[in-house]
Image (cartoon, rainbow, N blue to C red; front, side, top):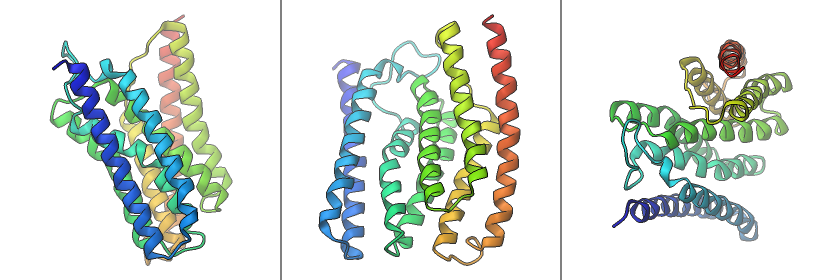
Length: 260
């Protein structure tokens, strides 16, 4: 059995499992809160389309499922990559749950699910480093999943009034400017190896914790959702984002300076 066939089958199995899990989750939410069933078809269609697109991309990039230092790609998706793929696939479900929260008390489902997805950002990195399973696809999927998840949730949180506009634009400056800088560096010097820094991961993880707290505030969860606690943590996270932005600016300056 060739690695392409076995790896492709592994990718499809994981995506099918993630898709079915999210279908079950949404069906259970609709049944538990007696939401009109006709409203379920749009979320299911979007989730199906996202999983199909993700499957096409991952099958196309199968050669990138290679552990650093190894000569040949993996024959199946390893656990760190599976967590990262699951985080990307969960983005539509998170957005729909947050939207439903405007009209239905879905806290018992939405908040744990949001925290679980955010926790995978820490877990996949630990598994990859301890198990020697750091792959090229894992590096750029991890960064991409963080960016996609944070940007999508940030836009929704801004529209819902869960975060102030100044925090949103500060965060977008951190994410979009760095992504643009990396794209420019790639155009100038070819493929650029994704680099994960402590400050970068710390800022993303801090934002994820803040967003979980913002959701808890919306639902009136004691202490962790206390508006005063959330506002204080909001400024702390903003400080971390500013420091991370400066760190990324220095990195990009050095990177672009080497390409001159």
